[in-house]
Image 1: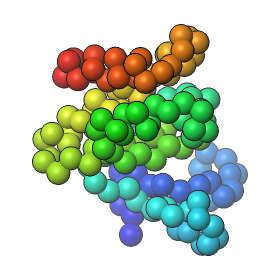
Image 2 (image 1 turned 120 degrees about the vertical axis):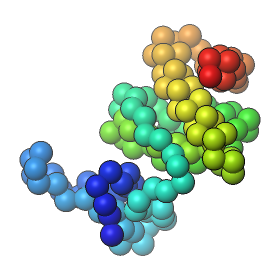
Image 3 (image 1 turned 90 degrees about the vertical axis):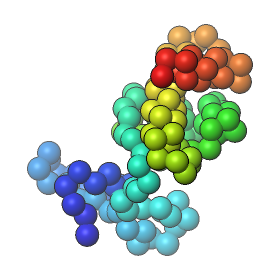
Image 4 (image 1 turned 135 degrees about the horizontal axis):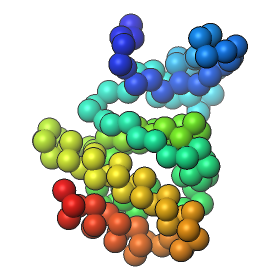
Length: 136
């Protein structure tokens, strides 16, 4: 059912080497954490951050995703490998693409604030979002 180029939300079950990896992209465990496994649809874009920052986003210690989501509704999938997929919930196609680009870039830029120990609060998050919007 998958085709080349599909972005898939799943988990690595077994890793032998670069050419032999077993991946599970179907929720076979019945655990609630598996909902949403499979191909990601909706015009989202894939971005890369460090695995440490991805784990930080997943930990909930920093409210970046909630603050951004209050301003621009979006869907996001974050992998512990440092990849994240984001898609604006905007219905109009061109605006959705622009919002998705802005969100992805803003989330990436937050990593510098976190790594720099500059302190990340709602005000700083919104400043980064505003700068990204102005740049587009």
